[in-house]
Every structure is written in structure tokens, then in C-alpha cells.
Length: 159
Image 1 (tube, rainbow, N blue to C red):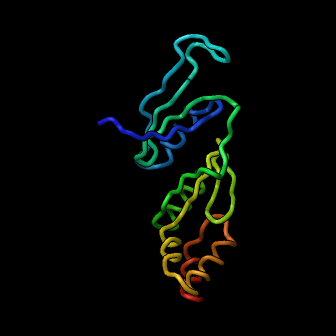
Image 2 (spheres, rainbow, N blue to C red):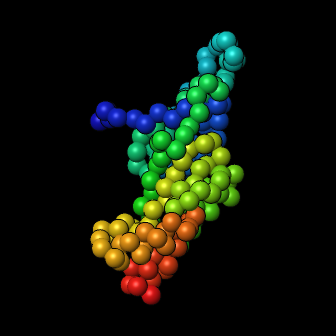
Image 3 (tube, rainbow, N blue to C red):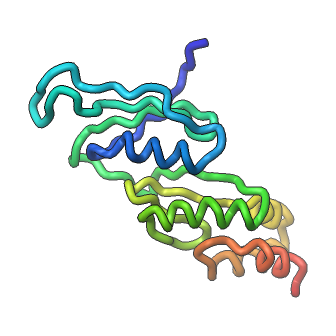
């Protein structure tokens, strides 16, 4: 079945490296095709990687080696819903240890400039609770870089 939507991510010559990292880090992720230039072209040569088709957490993507003219920003991010602290730590640490940078409230950026939200389901559930308990959980989250589920759950309970 042909898919109607594919996420296209712009890279500065590192699409294959990024796709390899995503495939090794996230489940249901793999590289399907690497397209290489059939001949020399302005700014490149035959054999250079032009695009990489890959699946990221089951979603179809294409990495385009488009050059330096466009940069990623926090206006676009990939949100990963995690089930527990171990999974949260695993994804966060993979991105940061792979050359990425930490931000606030569960956000980080990989070495290619893609923003990620590593968002434990416990945090989403705390926000859904509403009222004073959600406010406490929100205040706790505002002090964090990587989300600490135990701290969110304690804030939710008022302890």
C-alpha cells in the first residue's frame, strides 16, 4: 500500500548518519533505501547520498541532504511517549550521549538539530488530572530537563 504522508527532514549531508542513529535507537525504525546521485552535480559528485528513506517509530520519513540553507528549529519536534523511567532515560541518554543537547521540560535536540520531546505518559496523566495536583506536577516539570517520573508522581500526590 502506498502511503499518503511521509515526513521529510532536511540535513546538511548527514541524512544517512541520522537515519542509522534513529534505526539503532528507536523500535520499529529502519532504513529502507539510500538514493545516491547517478552523476556529478553542482555541489556534489556521483555516489553522494541524496536521500534516505527510513521508518522512525513506524512513521515513514525521508532524509534529504539539502545543504546548509535551512536549519531545524524548536517549531517542529518529535514527541516520544514513554512508559517508564527506564525508557525515558534510554531515549534521552541516547540523544544526549549521541552529541545532542539538553533543554527544559523533557525537550532535547539531537546532533542534527531535530528537537525531541521525551514525554512520559505519567506526565500527560498528571496534566489531565487538573486542579491543584496538575498544577503541582506542572511546577515540578518546570524545574526539570529530563523528566523524572517519581518527582512528577510525588508532586501529583502533594508529597
